[in-house]
Length: 176
Image 1 (cartoon, rainbow, N blue to C red):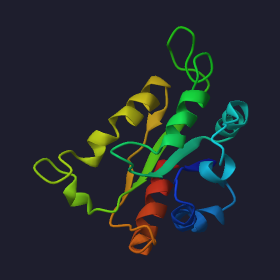
Image 2: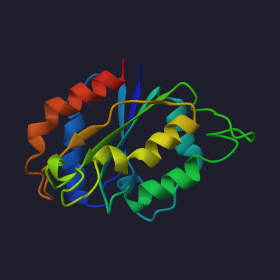
Image 3: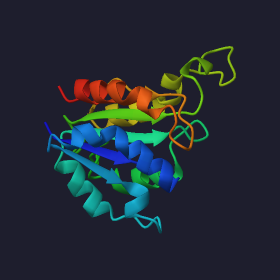
Image 4: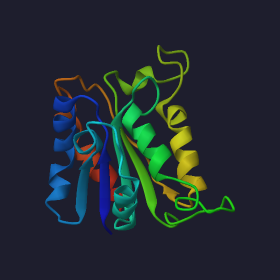
Protein backbone atom coordinates (compact mmCIF):
# COMPACT_ATOMS: atom_id res chain seq x y z
CA UNK A 1 0.00 0.00 0.00
CA UNK A 2 1.46 3.36 -0.98
CA UNK A 3 1.03 6.38 1.27
CA UNK A 4 0.92 10.07 0.39
CA UNK A 5 1.58 12.40 3.32
CA UNK A 6 0.33 15.88 2.49
CA UNK A 7 2.09 18.28 4.85
CA UNK A 8 0.41 21.66 5.28
CA UNK A 9 2.24 23.78 7.82
CA UNK A 10 2.39 27.55 7.12
CA UNK A 11 5.58 28.03 9.17
CA UNK A 12 8.55 26.91 7.05
CA UNK A 13 10.77 25.88 9.97
CA UNK A 14 7.93 24.14 11.79
CA UNK A 15 7.04 22.32 8.55
CA UNK A 16 10.61 21.02 8.33
CA UNK A 17 10.42 19.84 11.92
CA UNK A 18 7.01 18.22 11.37
CA UNK A 19 8.30 16.49 8.25
CA UNK A 20 10.88 14.76 10.44
CA UNK A 21 8.05 12.68 11.92
CA UNK A 22 7.71 10.94 8.56
CA UNK A 23 11.43 10.30 7.96
CA UNK A 24 11.40 6.70 9.25
CA UNK A 25 8.42 5.95 6.99
CA UNK A 26 10.08 7.53 3.94
CA UNK A 27 12.91 5.01 4.21
CA UNK A 28 10.43 2.23 3.34
CA UNK A 29 10.12 3.56 -0.20
CA UNK A 30 6.34 3.42 -0.59
CA UNK A 31 5.71 6.71 1.22
CA UNK A 32 5.71 10.12 -0.47
CA UNK A 33 5.93 13.38 1.50
CA UNK A 34 4.33 16.34 -0.28
CA UNK A 35 4.76 19.76 1.39
CA UNK A 36 2.03 22.08 0.11
CA UNK A 37 3.59 25.30 1.40
CA UNK A 38 6.94 24.43 -0.22
CA UNK A 39 5.26 23.39 -3.48
CA UNK A 40 2.89 26.36 -3.66
CA UNK A 41 4.44 29.42 -1.96
CA UNK A 42 2.24 31.60 -4.19
CA UNK A 43 -0.86 29.52 -3.28
CA UNK A 44 -1.53 28.74 -6.96
CA UNK A 45 -2.42 25.05 -6.84
CA UNK A 46 -2.00 22.70 -9.81
CA UNK A 47 -5.17 20.65 -9.31
CA UNK A 48 -4.34 18.13 -12.06
CA UNK A 49 -0.91 17.40 -10.55
CA UNK A 50 -2.48 16.98 -7.12
CA UNK A 51 -5.17 14.67 -8.48
CA UNK A 52 -2.48 12.57 -10.17
CA UNK A 53 -0.63 12.26 -6.85
CA UNK A 54 -3.82 11.15 -5.12
CA UNK A 55 -4.49 8.52 -7.78
CA UNK A 56 -0.97 7.09 -7.37
CA UNK A 57 -1.49 6.37 -3.66
CA UNK A 58 -3.96 4.29 -1.68
CA UNK A 59 -3.54 5.83 1.78
CA UNK A 60 -3.69 9.63 2.13
CA UNK A 61 -2.49 11.40 5.29
CA UNK A 62 -3.27 15.09 5.83
CA UNK A 63 -0.68 16.40 8.30
CA UNK A 64 -1.22 19.90 9.68
CA UNK A 65 -1.33 22.02 12.83
CA UNK A 66 -4.78 22.75 14.20
CA UNK A 67 -5.17 26.34 13.01
CA UNK A 68 -8.04 28.25 14.60
CA UNK A 69 -9.90 24.96 15.07
CA UNK A 70 -9.54 24.00 11.43
CA UNK A 71 -7.01 23.30 8.68
CA UNK A 72 -4.49 25.94 7.53
CA UNK A 73 -5.63 28.17 4.66
CA UNK A 74 -3.60 26.51 1.90
CA UNK A 75 -4.94 23.07 2.79
CA UNK A 76 -8.50 24.44 2.59
CA UNK A 77 -7.69 25.97 -0.82
CA UNK A 78 -6.19 22.62 -1.87
CA UNK A 79 -9.38 20.80 -0.89
CA UNK A 80 -11.56 23.32 -2.74
CA UNK A 81 -9.53 23.07 -5.96
CA UNK A 82 -8.49 19.41 -6.00
CA UNK A 83 -11.58 17.67 -4.63
CA UNK A 84 -13.80 18.96 -7.39
CA UNK A 85 -17.17 17.72 -8.62
CA UNK A 86 -16.84 15.19 -11.40
CA UNK A 87 -13.50 13.98 -10.07
CA UNK A 88 -13.51 13.52 -6.28
CA UNK A 89 -17.24 12.94 -6.31
CA UNK A 90 -19.51 12.21 -9.22
CA UNK A 91 -21.90 14.53 -10.97
CA UNK A 92 -24.64 12.54 -9.25
CA UNK A 93 -23.10 13.38 -5.84
CA UNK A 94 -21.75 9.86 -5.31
CA UNK A 95 -18.09 8.90 -4.79
CA UNK A 96 -15.59 9.53 -7.58
CA UNK A 97 -11.96 8.60 -8.17
CA UNK A 98 -11.01 8.45 -4.48
CA UNK A 99 -13.50 5.70 -3.67
CA UNK A 100 -11.84 2.86 -1.77
CA UNK A 101 -8.81 4.87 -0.68
CA UNK A 102 -8.21 5.69 2.98
CA UNK A 103 -7.86 9.11 4.60
CA UNK A 104 -6.09 9.78 7.86
CA UNK A 105 -5.32 13.02 9.66
CA UNK A 106 -2.16 13.74 11.65
CA UNK A 107 -2.91 16.92 13.56
CA UNK A 108 -0.52 18.80 15.82
CA UNK A 109 -1.37 21.27 18.54
CA UNK A 110 0.68 23.34 20.96
CA UNK A 111 -1.67 22.49 23.82
CA UNK A 112 -2.04 19.26 25.73
CA UNK A 113 -4.73 17.06 24.16
CA UNK A 114 -6.57 17.09 27.50
CA UNK A 115 -7.35 20.79 26.92
CA UNK A 116 -9.64 19.66 24.09
CA UNK A 117 -12.50 18.38 26.21
CA UNK A 118 -15.89 19.79 27.20
CA UNK A 119 -15.46 22.19 30.10
CA UNK A 120 -11.79 22.80 29.27
CA UNK A 121 -10.28 25.88 27.54
CA UNK A 122 -10.83 24.57 23.97
CA UNK A 123 -14.44 23.46 24.73
CA UNK A 124 -14.57 20.61 22.21
CA UNK A 125 -12.62 17.44 21.51
CA UNK A 126 -10.13 17.25 18.67
CA UNK A 127 -12.35 14.59 17.07
CA UNK A 128 -15.19 17.12 17.03
CA UNK A 129 -12.98 19.65 15.22
CA UNK A 130 -12.14 16.97 12.64
CA UNK A 131 -15.77 16.11 11.78
CA UNK A 132 -15.73 18.15 8.51
CA UNK A 133 -12.72 16.14 7.30
CA UNK A 134 -14.37 12.86 8.27
CA UNK A 135 -17.55 13.94 6.45
CA UNK A 136 -15.46 14.77 3.38
CA UNK A 137 -13.77 11.35 3.43
CA UNK A 138 -17.07 9.52 3.75
CA UNK A 139 -18.72 11.62 1.01
CA UNK A 140 -15.84 10.72 -1.30
CA UNK A 141 -16.19 7.00 -0.57
CA UNK A 142 -12.95 6.87 1.40
CA UNK A 143 -12.29 4.95 4.59
CA UNK A 144 -11.75 7.27 7.57
CA UNK A 145 -8.78 6.05 9.61
CA UNK A 146 -8.12 6.88 13.26
CA UNK A 147 -6.57 10.37 13.54
CA UNK A 148 -3.10 10.84 14.98
CA UNK A 149 -2.87 13.63 17.55
CA UNK A 150 0.54 15.14 18.21
CA UNK A 151 0.10 17.47 21.17
CA UNK A 152 2.36 19.78 23.19
CA UNK A 153 4.36 20.78 20.10
CA UNK A 154 5.76 24.31 20.10
CA UNK A 155 6.94 26.26 17.04
CA UNK A 156 10.53 25.20 17.71
CA UNK A 157 9.47 21.56 17.53
CA UNK A 158 10.08 20.84 21.18
CA UNK A 159 7.85 18.02 22.28
CA UNK A 160 7.73 16.49 18.82
CA UNK A 161 10.26 13.72 19.44
CA UNK A 162 7.91 12.33 22.10
CA UNK A 163 5.45 11.48 19.32
CA UNK A 164 7.59 9.81 16.64
CA UNK A 165 6.58 6.30 17.73
CA UNK A 166 2.90 7.23 18.00
CA UNK A 167 3.01 8.82 14.54
CA UNK A 168 4.73 5.85 12.89
CA UNK A 169 2.38 3.37 14.58
CA UNK A 170 -0.66 5.48 13.67
CA UNK A 171 0.23 5.87 10.01
CA UNK A 172 1.18 2.19 9.92
CA UNK A 173 -2.22 1.20 11.30
CA UNK A 174 -3.95 3.28 8.63
CA UNK A 175 -1.92 1.55 5.93
CA UNK A 176 -3.25 -1.93 6.77
